[in-house]
Image (cartoon, rainbow, N blue to C red):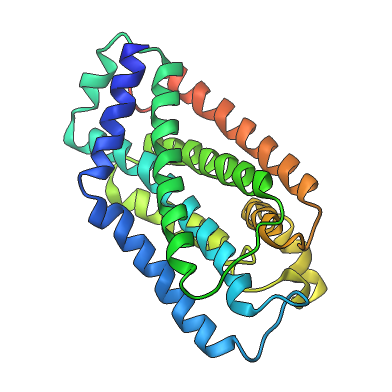
Length: 251
């Protein structure tokens, strides 16, 4: 386990050494969203009975930040190693593809949880949130960050340069994040767009995570948890297959 632990520690230090950029910056971005949207819509929108719009918004922003940063950690690490050429030093080690996967995934989960927890704690200065189902909150946070960590490994393996990775993030991750119900309930959408939203796995992560706070959601949290778990297993299987074959990593 020493090799796995060493790679995991290396990945942790990689983002923690620049925590002002990797942690503080996304927290600031989320708080700006909260400040602007709560100021504009607080007195005009109420999604759930007895829940203010600001309170409704905080879990969505927390989960969105968590997901985006879990993805960013594993994807940016791989593309940097590939572009700089030091990926060869990892490939020469006797690490198995399982250890490679677990180390990168665990580091992505840690960064996602650190950013998400920071956003949540800072947002408490605006409003106190109930914790109706703490275990559901933890489950969705862990599975969501793991799912995006695995997707980040796939993106990092696929991309050959930084602009390809940026395209993946800007045209896939960002739209799925913003159109997942972070700022609204999908019940406020026309029927067609409600059906489209149900095709977005990010919707299930955010709605289930929000349910953990308020005990209210757009869909059963157990359905959401099942769908998110299946997506994670599918992405993990795909990632392990790519690593085993050495796709775009081993000549």
